[in-house]
Image 1 (cartoon, one colour):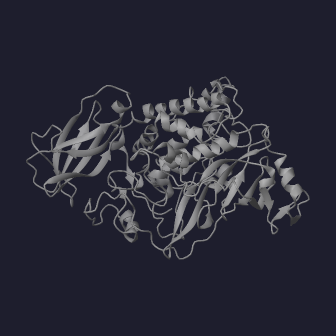
Image 2 (tube, one colour):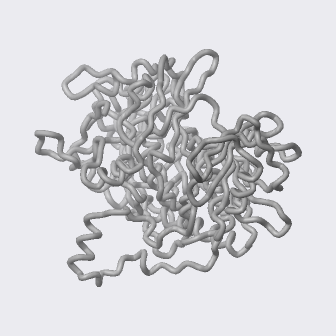
Image 3 (tube, one colour):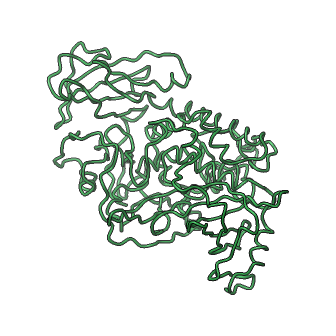
Length: 559
């Protein structure tokens, strides 16, 4: 089996470590500073350029020739289907803090203030002063503005469709809070209420009129745009603001390959655990428009060092919303699928899909969001996503435990940030998120042994059984065996008589490994311990699942 693509001490050495394959001399399995919980400081990016990606290319090409290195795909000229293990992890199988992801709620429960603030360091635009209109978006069903508040901060100001007040703004805001809690980098999104006279046009602002000609923007242009968005009885308008991200925009990131102008981007995106696990997170939130155009890379600068940060943006197509209208009832399925087409064709349309059986209450501010027909394993976005296609049971477990860690109260706090005016609509969203969360745990926790947060207490190996914690089953019994472990040769030597959770006393090296199994021996966990002075510490974790031993793992290279 291939060596895990784990994060190492030096970013400069990461690419070399990832390229090591069978037959080559390898370094130790564990380094003295393992496990890393934060990636090393990024290497300086000399030159990164903006790139635009085609929205239509994903729909037209991906169903026929999905890009990237996909699990179970036969390589050119090869006979054996290959599987790629996740990369960008530490030796515990966790994702260290990095330019894609940061460990948050699962590792330290967030307060109500933290959940509702999201990534906020600034907050919404200053409400006491004028908002300067810098530019305007007039095309499409829902227009919007770029504004600058009295403190000089720039925001995107977006609105709901006229017929569905709160649909897009509530979704975009509260989903951003939950993605932040799950660990992703997102913009600061907030609900705002304002009056027409708060908007003031910058004299330099240009506007493209109905005739397609660009000219100076007028007060009438602003008024005509606001006629196309909902207005409250008190005369105020509701919108959602998204604070401009710091740095220079570089365009979207793809869900496969790497940025060739970023020396820190060494793991193909389809093999990053934080991107594979995003599949489970998007399934929970119904974010079916999770594709490249709803991401953004930004070139940051800190102390003279430039590096690329990767953000998720635009969450209006989630929670039953399609931004401009309620989502399609078949949301959670590819827009085009050969399997579904064949099924309908050969059954003459008599095979009724599960999505067609769903019930949706009449909440215009929510759209089509439900939980009774939700199948996390079958859920897919509208477009094929190579990262999602590569997800393995250990990737799904990593993501599912993040979802299960979001409590009922935290869900309510996030939904509060959406400011639904109908309490019944808000309660429906809360209920759906709770039920969908629980179903995710029930499905993905069964694929592996859901044991986590390993530690040594006294001289005993301890852990959390997430299945027991979330009341999925009673306290089961586990068997454990121990072996001495050679860190250079990666060989094991069984320790006779060591079958309990106490660390054996008759060890003969710096490392030991405990193998834990339950009812199914294929679903095992190997926990590696290292002696530190007189104590033992957890240094590595490897998870098994049914059929894993029969897979042929490949070493990935850059795409």
